Length: 192
Image (cartoon, rainbow, N blue to C red; front, side, top):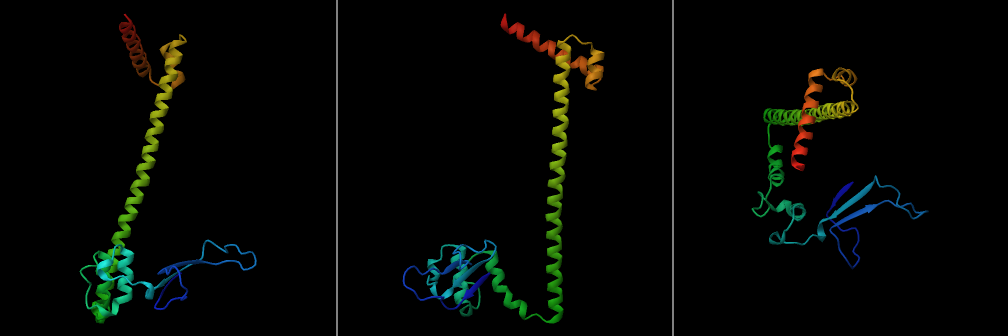
């Protein structure tokens, strides 16, 4: 849960954090109660940076939240799409019912298109991944059958027997044996 406060939870001296993150503790065991429930308190009075001191987006958000009522438009020092949208929100409240309907329809259309694109990306990635795995498995299977065919040939089996055992065609087995023979001859030539 996030709470934006226009007051401070405590006035204790020491480190005065703007953002406090709090977890629940079991009073009897003194152990953390749950990792699932956390509280974040943003204490705006503790944020004292001037606009020329803003360094991060968090700083910009805190500055805007603390000073929002003072602005007619977005300060030039606060850049970014999300901050532009923030300053367009008041315009939304001035729309008449027809303009409001048109705006809601355009937002819905945008969301539908965005969701369709995200779904297409996920689907195509998933499909590509499955296709890649399938191709890899087929290549590995062919490599295994090729290695087995070579072992059978070295044991003196005939091309017909090797083809029968590996489910490769006799022509493919001949090609494998020819490549093997060529590689062996090239190795012998290098040794000379």
